[in-house]
Amino acid sequence: MRIPFRTGDGETVWFYVLEQTRFYGMSYLLVTEDADAEETEVYILKDTSREDSEEAVYEMVEDEQELNAVAGLFRELVEDAELVEDAEFSGNEKVVEEAGDEAVGEPEK
Image 1 (cartoon, helix red, strand yellow):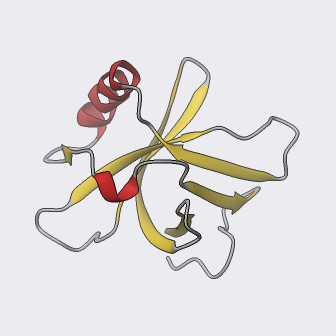
Image 2 (cartoon, one colour):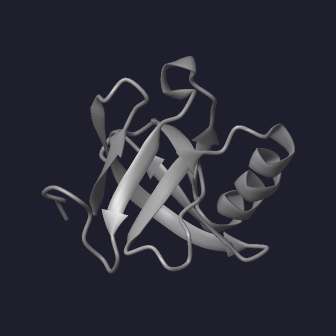
């Protein structure tokens, strides 16, 4: 499944969801821009939306300690994933998806 990610400057980037997990009550997604590449960069997004919200809001995990802890969980779930930071996606980027399985816009499966 692909979901849209809106950057701080309003650009929309589409990510493929590779895996998801929960850690200390928070939801996290492991995403990439190219799911078919033999080697690709992956990113970790954290659900920062309110519990009563109809839409989920995800932000890049930037805290190094949190990133390392969640990356360890994803490494156990997905082999051969290289977790990297990318300055292009730092700041107040957000992914917004509707409650349920469909993302805002036209997600592709």
